[in-house]
Length: 228
View 1 (cartoon, rainbow, N blue to C red):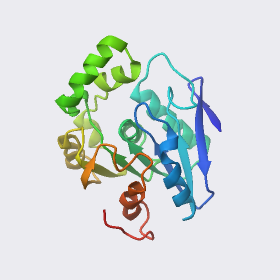
View 2: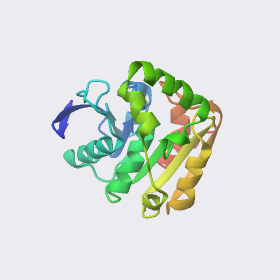
View 3: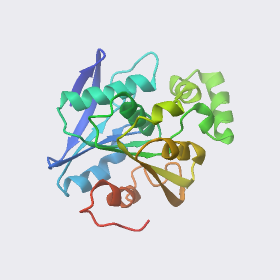
């Protein structure tokens, strides 16, 4: 299915038709299919699940230049387009950045955001990650790499007015610095961090049953809490 924002046709998939709503946002260079398994699982538990392809990704229209703020506006427009009532949003990596920017822009239409592996600025990526990214960008001029090397630039002051509940998942061996997540927790009004042991940035997310075990205790109290 498609919806339009900013002159672009943006792709989304709906799974289930339950009473509770959750939106999934993927990371850089991926598409929404990474969540197919968890979408089916949640649909069986009375959820309506929406999987979005970010602009320039998957089956959504391409753009000349990617910007996290534009993606955040896409998310807000999608929620308004479907008239969704206080959905939960889960975002991984770039998707987590987009979710965070969305609640900075509009703190009234999302119930809670669950975000994995986020950085507040490019230096939030560990140096061992940034160096090969810069080298690759030098030779390829890939716009997805440029995006990660120049954005986001989220000011601490922007976090202080957020009332939306924020749960940050930080993998023990993540490629982003934990200080970024701690800054959100220390400055947003209603934020907490959950450390995922023995995992890296994406190992528990991409097409992985572990993601359900991680999210279940936090998306709905009626779901059975699981160890992970």
